[in-house]
Figure 1 (cartoon, rainbow, N blue to C red):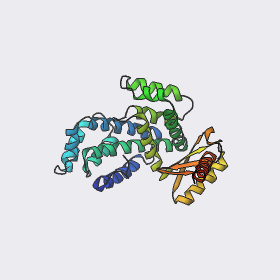
Figure 2: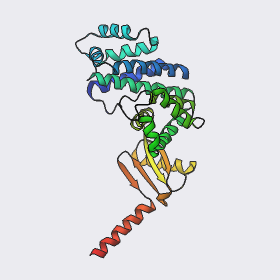
Figure 3: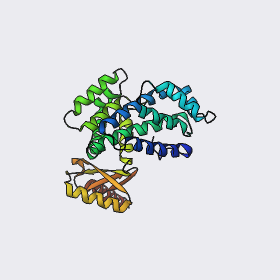
Figure 4: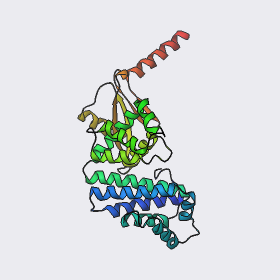
Length: 281
């Protein structure tokens, strides 16, 4: 759940909560941000497990003091004071539904992970590696099946994904994957990882441009492409390139539901359709 998907009071409440996370982690280290993310995830999991608890903590008829007292009773002994403070601030805000509260806590959990990566100097690595891992999982039916199979424990899935990417990803990405596998919330791994990627990129107000190219693009060409897309679209872009020999030449760019296809394959198909049309006439 992103800020764009929330409406009304929930959207405003999430914005306030995101500012509170930033303030809480100001001048803190990467380990502090990781610890906060883990505590927030613990609280979110508890709230996910009880609809009655979510209703109690988001009921507009209950005063904020009563909600704060309930949050302290529930989490005071299991999470850090800084995490508890954020949960108290969260329950004092107005939410359209109990699920909006837990969705918002998930968002700030991911943002705490992103802040940890920024402090560690691994922000760019995290963004690029997460996008590459999304592609790797999408390309392997066997891997998707293993990660989504309910008969395997969370620990087994965490070990599997850690072994697959060990040595090829940053420490920050490894932490995100570990937490993500343990926090699917009824979604499959692909959707969950895509959500994490979306929240991480949204911190920098960036959109992903998924590019397919017949050849690997060097740094200069990537920079030129990114700059051209940003000029055309009017906002920041993260270029994610997938090398696909079937493209044969040129590139295709997908941004959300919009496809800008300039590949040789596409031009050949268009020419073929044109010739077929002439033959019919």
